[in-house]
Image (tube, rainbow, N blue to C red; front, side, top):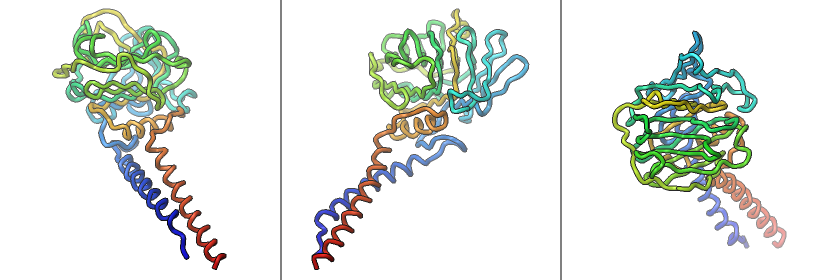
Length: 311
């Protein structure tokens, strides 16, 4: 007599898990570029050091690969970053190097509505900070930064993420930089989803305080987009805060990506730049489902063998 009481439910559970995982996998294969991670959204800004970097004549331009034309550049003497053709810290991929003193790239006319949502955004930055306070990415419209979207990674040993209308009051979340942050390449993920804020490092959530946003940003009109540093003189202030290190890739989405999409992009960036990234739970589910299904088949075969022996 066949004993299927154990194998049939096990198979059904495994097939269900595999079906869910396959659905997530197929969804993750949706592409937004000829060479990019598969997500269900398209980036509003996409900078990568192996594409669109133009040097010469004492200038450097980094051309946006998203199709929005949010190119950034600088030709001011003493403020121009350099292109490194191959960096061992980034799996021998190219990076743009900023000197930590005066280097930065900018575009004075970037439309806010095309770049970010009023209360939603997702940002990925692949960078190495050699130490010291820095600005990695910023979009704002005035000198006192009361209407600002910005990433400081890091500043006073914290990773800061601004997205709102009043600087440092209701629009900024912060996470302590973990030991070993300086001097190593990382995949930094930041998200605003209405009031909820998230900061992740190499695929792991960091504890944030505060952890929520209170005020939406006014993204109407044009603002100044700056990468690798922030020169407040561009918007009427004074002083430059530059990254002391390298940036390999920047991705900005104007929406709050799903956890599955975040995991997809982090895995793509980690693999591309040789950075160890913690997999999303859905990726574990796929592996578990396959192991589970194989186990069910083995159990069934053993039961059949036992049945024949008994007969």
